[in-house]
Length: 547
Image (cartoon, rainbow, N blue to C red):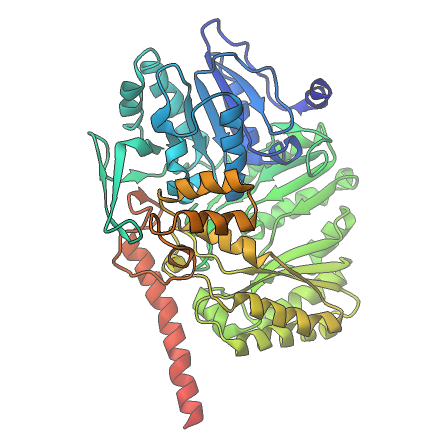
């Protein structure tokens, strides 16, 4: 079974033959193979390691793995989803590696991790990792391996102290966190050794972005070849981690990166996926459309990640329909123009209507819209406007199947809304939308509110949560397990309300205050002030109406 899965892969790179003294490395994705191999980040890091003769790398997933070294020196995890932490702990235990970094000795491998979850807020997971790589991997991975080679034969404390000097390499054990009291806010985060006071994520500024290094029918998206067209998003919606954490907005060079990458992919598959938070905002997107419209590409299947609403043209819809795509996804967040001003979503309802009309005219059969409830500043009138907008869309593009996917606002580190808690009314508001839209024949798909609460817990958590995470895993990794764990730890750590629902003081020390994202805290506060000015403006307007 395992051999056949790996034998089915079509590689788009040439693995190196490892040297006799190559660094024995396991690189894991803490989920099943079909999920992990569909992660472009995981693919690229694995290929980067596999092309080095000084590294012998074996892949591992929760269901299958390559032949593993008996005594690995490095064990790495690519972390894309917060809730995969359970699989990380299970895998470490299965290898008889102590779960907590402080319990490991010189005979244990260094456990490192990277990916969007750990870059945003590593703190709930910090006690489980020796090393955390913050930011883009293009240069950071090579810097990490080079620094490790310099202290490969040293003891563990020497290795960690040396690695901490590399920009973007975070060694949690070399930073101490103190609290005002066991259930209170953080008092201080300070280095314990000669390491930087603040760890800055590494940012890659080149114009050659990522593309698939392997294509396989066993991937969650069968036989797909992925090309990263843009990185980050210039719109900067104030809740959006994908934009704020990955700034600045970067685009792949059309001639030297995008086209060669697509041609490499088409040599092995006919399914192409264009990735990025705002693909259609590539400055040469029209040229890319023209290139993909060539008759010799009539056989390919094309899919595009979420696109900016006002870039949905009939021409784009027609090309996608010809290339075996039936649906398009746009993020509108709300039908309320007031709320979109608060979150900095530069979009008006006329543009949303036009996108639906263009999608239908171009031959697409369905349009999926992303919405959100519980956004700071939201009230019931905003939800009613979302219902009204969806009804108008149905009239504007009759026959176009409409889906509204709806998430709950979750505060994310390094965004202007990180100080706001989850809205306690969010679940009821989602139910209101469902009740209003279902009779209209509009498919409403809410994300699980309860799991959004757990996501908020982990996105805002500090190191005290490591105790909770271990207990939750022990109790069975269900929603009830989290409640039981909080009950067990009552008085030892803050309660759920503190992490999830509380609005935090603007001057309190945040769990990630020693991690420098793309924008300084002072800048985030300015963006927050702009949002709150819009909220207050609305309050004054409604008072004038009542007068």
